[in-house]
Length: 283
Image (tube, helix red, strand yellow):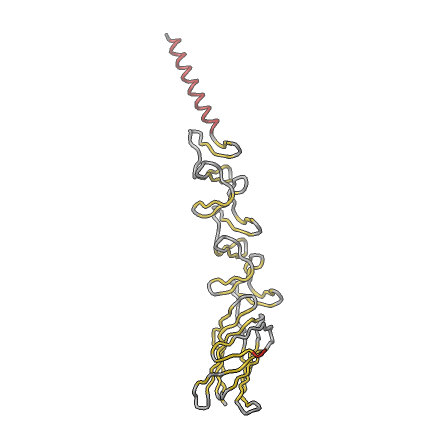
């Protein structure tokens, strides 16, 4: 009788050991037709969840299989071909991204090492000129530039915070009022490009008044016989440093008020002149 009881106990213990051994064997990484999944060893498996294996992190999707490539898990993450979560700098298709220590893709300002970088809304590292918060910055190889920097043969000055210093503007170099060959008043307006940039256009206003102080419709032309009237004048020719624009006006002008408001560079920047450069000439 005792022998039978012991036999039953032995069978039960053997069965339990087999179950436990089987469960232990199923724990960890499992391969299903080339797809990897992760078993907890208790009948459960990783699904919509993270798993850490050594120093590496992996993620298993809704189907329970390990993910690779870009994945939106709250934020954006990237996993290599082995399923390992990327951190730090990551390049894909010639574009650079920066992933934090937690793996989340960064946007906006990022400091890496001793340099500052700017990541676009899609995570791509910015290069070249970029206007941020009303100020212009330049990113050389992705790194924010400070101090004096020559870009495409032109010298630029940046603050320690990377903002472009715009201290030099086009100026009204002269205004002269005389008469032409038939006795009409003629105004000569000369605009000088003293910046380090190649200017594509200068915006300014010209207000003309007659001998009684009444505003009149000033009319004239500038280089290449392009007409201008009162209001915004926009020469369309590119102007290197040291270049002058010459404007000529007619029609009974006695007083001229000229104000430069902004200028546009050939690299796509628009610079507002903070203090209106205004010259009034009276004859």
